[in-house]
Amino acid sequence: MAVTTQQRNQQTTQQTLAPSPARQFMREFFRARVATAGFALLLLLLLAALFAPLLAPQNPYDLARLDLLDARLAPGAVSKDSRLTFLLGSDAQGRDMLSAMLYGLRISVIVGAASTAIALAAGLVLGLLAGYRGGRIDAVLMRVVDIQLSFPSILIALVLLALSGPGLGKIIAALAAAQWAYYARTARSAALVERRKEYIEAATCLGLSGTRIMLRHLLPNCLPPLVVVAALQVAAAISLEATLSFLGLGLPVTEPSLGLLIANGFEYMLSGKYWISLFPGIALLLLVASITLVADRLRDVLNPRLEARVP
Image 1 (cartoon, rainbow, N blue to C red):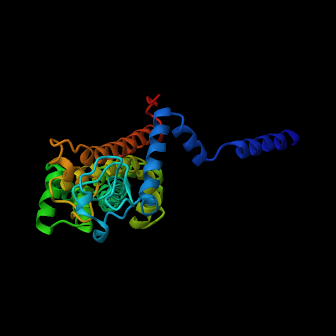
Image 2 (image 1 turned 180 degrees about the vertical axis):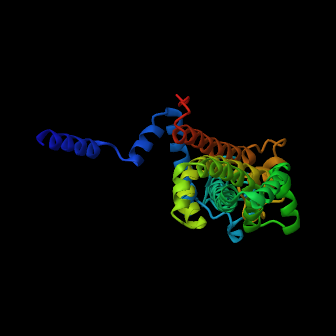
Image 3 (image 1 turned 45 degrees about the vertical axis):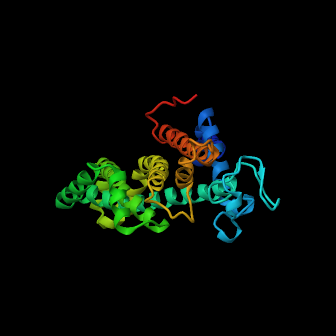
């Protein structure tokens, strides 16, 4: 009896000292130096976007405070009224490039995160429904997914924006409509694997409804691959929005994203006004690269069959 009690105490002590799943996940994630650097850079960019109104020397959306006499000034130049120093120069509208980049970074993050969230929600519901129900529902939904995936995402977004016109809400909806199929295919594949397992059969034998089985049992086990896909698609959505804005089909000129800032300075590159496109391009590159590094590390951590290859 004493031995049993001692063993029980040892087991209790081991369970108490064992790290929580969240702490273990964070420890494994930050074990890779490259992923840690990517996460730190991403966090810095997100904080800069969040506190843009506090950090920006100028409100680039306030047209009353812009002066064309301050247009295309070089980095380090002073405005004509000597109230503002353009640390990164100014653009063709007289906007401070640092301020425009901070606000543009915020818009790019909002577009990427919002479009990904909407596409993830729609694709997850349809994918779970197709994978669990099967039959005609699965056949119809997967044919629709196959048809959409046969077209490039940028082509679908171009058509939708050409019909609806530019705007923040419209580009978010267009990107979500162009990307939901990726999540539907991933969720359906994960649901097909899980529905054949014993715990799903046991839940079915107990008489649980299909909705409860999908939400309580299938959904938690299908999330890990979807999290990785969503992280990668955030970077893809930001790049796609930048491309559409560069082509003039994204956001209005009065609310520029990083892609639109690059487009605004493209025509001045040959005249030596490199800073109008260069600095927003660097910010866009750092944002997409940091998200990609974090997503790549999430893939390794969430899938134990993959070995960590990031040093």
